[in-house]
Amino acid sequence: MGLVEKPISLESKGYGNLGQESPKDLAKAHGNEGLEWAWMLEEMKRIEVAQKNKMGQGSPKDEWAKEAQNNDDIPPKKGKDELESLGACHRAIQGIHAVDYVVTNTAANTTGGSRFNNEIGSKYSKQTLTNATNFTWKIFQQKTTADRKKVAKVSLFIEDIDGVAYAVNNEIHVSARYIASYSGDVKREITGVLFHEMTHIWQWNGNGQSPPGGLIEGIADFVRLKSGYVPSHWVQPGKGDRWDHGYDVTARFLDYLNGLRNGFVADLNKKLRTGYSANYFVELLGKTVDQLWSDYKAKYGN
Ligand SMILES: [Zn+2]
Image 1 (cartoon, helix red, strand yellow):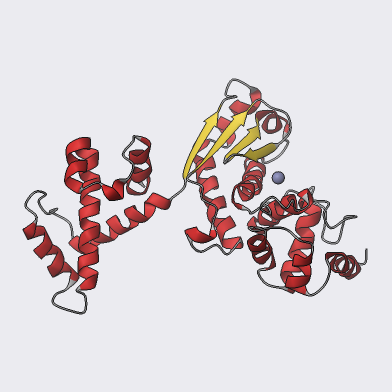
Image 2 (cartoon, protein in one colour; image 1 turned 45 degrees about the horizontal axis):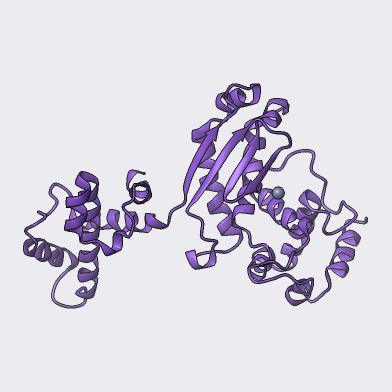
């Protein structure tokens, strides 16, 4: 946990451009933290050398030892298997791209804010945000950072506001009043809400070509549907008057379309990265969205 989070905390302290500073400079400038970071950079270099030589002169371990001998500024780490250490550093370097999550309850002195602390909590929320991100990437089939929106930090606020929740500027705002008034398993409900809002953080929105708002909300509830955190008040499949009604109605429809073409929602979201056209439905499924809606309604006898 510490290793993965460290690069972000280093950056936030103004230790940016880590790749361009020499390990020695880092160590000099930043004391113990810089030294730890310097260690990672050094060991990453050793991984590269080791990998280059894997089929050649020596094993990665030999190379590491040789490199360490040549570098008398920073002594080799002791008491740990070197390769295990290299693996940890590799994971730490990957951690540079990890998303940071911050939870703030500004309504702690209200009934809902207090209920949040007692029945949900910051720790659970942070874990849920992490899970929701990973789950959304999976549903969207975004395997690499190039496929995803570039977001370094997501902040969750519990606030004394009306409504349920909204997402804006990589922030999720949840209403403490809603938490106060919810009857039932509020932890489960807010988990579902966070899956919906986190989808808004990661989904593509048509690049200025204004897809129907109901489609955007439907995709967010589709991810919530797939997560399993579905509230009992949602409509059943086949219900609703319009395909772009949004929320549960559109989520159920998208689930039907996803059944016609595995990965349909992921493919649609990919297309929404560069624009929006109703013709996307034809391109992906061979029928207009109105025809697909008719088929869907007919299937459920509505
Ligand atoms: Zn929404």
